[in-house]
Structures are given as structure tokens and as C-alpha cells.
Amino acid sequence: MNAENDTICAISTPPGVGAIAVLRLSGPQAVSVADQLFSSTQGPLSQKASHTLHYGSWMEQGVLLDEVVVALFRAPRSYTGEDVVEISCHGSEYIQQRLLQSLVQQGARLAAPGEFTQRAFLNGKMDLSQAEAVADVIASRSDVFHRIAMHQMRGGFSACLQQLRSQLLEFTSLLELELDFSEEDVAFADRKALTLLVDQMDEVLARLIASFAYGNVVKSGVPVAIVGKTNVGKSTLLNALLNEERAIVSDVHGTTRDTIEGVITLRGIRFRFIDTAGIRSTEDEVENMGIQRTFVKVRQARVVLLMTEASAAVAEVLDEIQALEIQEGQALIVLLNKADRFTGAPLEETLGALRHHLSGGTFLPLAAKFREGLPALERVLVQVVEQLGAGADEVVVTNVRHLEALRQARTSLGRVREGLQTTLPVDLLTQDAREVLYYLGTITGEITTQEILGNIFEKFCIGK
View 1 (tube, one colour):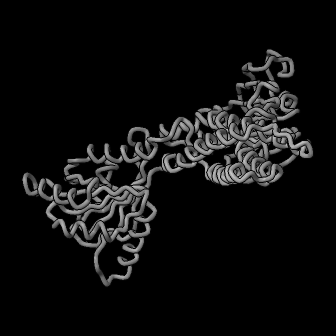
View 2 (cartoon, rainbow, N blue to C red):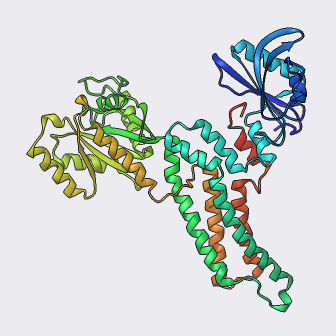
View 3 (cartoon, one colour):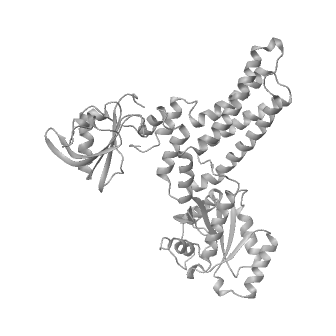
């Protein structure tokens, strides 16, 4: 990042033409830069109070560029903790660029990606995990992930970590005090209380780490692979779920030769459905490439929808299930399609036999062509994700950086436990406890480096 005492500017609304666009200005010269360009009958911005709106003209060398509304936020009561000016202008791309150029000509510089939020972090307006949650809120595309990101941005995750860190820090300080009185053989830290704290911390860290499985899928969208033999109705199902003709449907075998994806949201959860090439033996080189991709998508999917015809023999369906090699953590749902042609007792016998062979398996009759059975399938998909997050409380980990830090903290905590059990020397025990504090501190930014900040904020959009 560039110098923190510069005054920075950027267009904060997305590229394109709209009714209104917003430009943002932050830094020690924000108000004076704006006053060089903004003209109002009510007087200059330098005479105005914080958190006020002002209507006027944006002038450049005596030429009117636009009529604008300016919002003024004075330090430290602003998003960045600095003086901030936000200019609402008409959404013409030409006007946006002319206003941005005028700010640069008056001494502001273009902001780097995420620089406004980085300044908010550096000025103590939020910690690092809250700053990262800002990007998640902006990127949220489902109700569930939006709620998780908002909770983290408002400090829910930080509060949980701060409580753990402060408790351990108190004990660590007492351990370090013992080092100063090592010759007197005095114990300041209650070992039983410390052991109890370590056990409680381990439980919380384990729960946070486990929540990532849920947090990751709601953040990225739940990948659902639709697989099966050719002409069992995979493309028909995709089209029915998306309510549009996304995939080509044909009686010709091998029509789908590559993966086709579509996204829908069910009960606030985003699902990414992937239609795959039908599995069969073929000498067609291109089709074989598509079939290989099918198995790659199966390994990557959180949920696998195996489609077969309702009239298929039970042994045949079981062979298809075995060939998929479903891994731990994946959910398999077997869909017996074209059930409208195979109803009554025969269908119930097939379902009963499958459930007998795979106790606890999910088997659903379906008629994708007529959209019959889709509500039941959608309910099961939502249940799969809800079960994944059943043990998660309000704090859900969605960030890989946080996950790795939590894992390292728990490893170090394990060494603290072992040290307490084996009466490890106080200096080594203190070192392990300090490592736990270090890794937790890297999440909230109490311990950080310029490299970490660069990696985080370069992924932000410009203007935030």
C-alpha cells in the first residue's frame, strides 16, 4: 500500500451507466480538495459539521461538470477514521471519470484495492477479521452467507477470539512471572485452572474449525454434481431446476459432452448444479474426455445426484453407486427418474430393496420431464446443508486464512496440554502458550505483517 497520510480517491460504484454514482475521498486533505471543486450557496465544506449532506455544483476551472450531493464525515467518526467526503453524481461514465480526474488534479491520488478498508483497520475502526468480512458482505449472494458475513463484520467472531485470548494471556503472564522468581520455586498460575481453560479453549477451537465445512459451502455455493448413464434425464433435471432451457435435451446418446452449470438459491442457500456427460463405454475420444470430467466433478462435489431410471434393476443401481466411490463428507442422493412410467408396487419394491442394501441412503422417485418430485428433492438438498451446519453456532468460519490460524493455534494448545500433564519447564510451557496467542492474534490483526495486509486487501474491489 502507499503512504497512509495521502488523500485517496476512487469511484465506489460498479462500472457502467446508472442513475447515480458515488465517488469517495479520504485523508487529511479530503475536505480542502473537495472545497476546490465543490461550490454551494451555503458556503464551503470546511465550515460544515460532520455527517451532513450538501447540494451544489462541481466545477473545474470555471466549467460546470455536474450537480452533485456531497456527504461529509469528519475524523474520527467516519468509515476510515479520517476525514471522508462522498460525492453522489449522475451515473454517466464520462461524468464519473471527469470528477475523478479533477480530484487527482487537486492533489488526491487513486486508491489501491481495499485501501479505504485498510485505513479503517489501521485507524482502529475495525479489526482484521471484521475488515475481511466487509469483502464477504459485498460478495454475498445468498441469505445464509449474508447473515454469517454480517455477524462477523459486526464483531461476533472477534469477540469469541478476544475472550479466549484474554483468558489465556492472563495465565501466560502469571507463568512468565514465575520465571522471574524461579529460584524461589513459587507458583503463581493455578495449574488445575489452566488445564480447565485449555480444555475449554480446545472445545471452542474444535467447533470453529468444524464450522468451516458449513461456512465454505454457503460462501462458495454448494456444488451439486448430476451424474448417471446417458439419456436418464440429467439435462432435463438441470433445466427443470433452473426453470430454463440451459442444457440440450435429446434422445441421442452422448449429447452432453462437457459440464454445464447453473445456480439457484433454495431457502437462502446457494446451490451450483453441474450437469455432466453421461457415463457409458464409448470409442468417441471427445465423449470420453467428457466422461473423465464427470468423475472429476464427482470428487469435487459436496452433493452427488445419481440419476437412474426407475425401471433399472437394483443390482445395476448398486453397481453405479459403487463406481462413483463417494467419499466421506459427500452426500449421495439417488434419483429414480421417469417414475411416471413405473409406479405402484414395482416402484415401492425397488425403493425398499435399495434402502435395505444401503441403510440410511436417500432415494427419491422423480419425473423430471413433468417436474414431479422436484419439491421433495429441493427439501432434501436444503436438509443436507442444514445438517452440515447443525453443530455450528452464530460464529461460522468461512475464511481459509482463519481456518489455518485456528488449526495452528489448536496444535500449539495441544502442546500446552501435554506440557501441563508432563510438568514441562515453565519457559517451554510459556513458549507454547505464546504461540496460541500469536495465531489467534493473526486472525484479528493484533499480530500482523505488511505481507498479510497486502494479501488480504489486494483482493478487495477498488473504492472499498
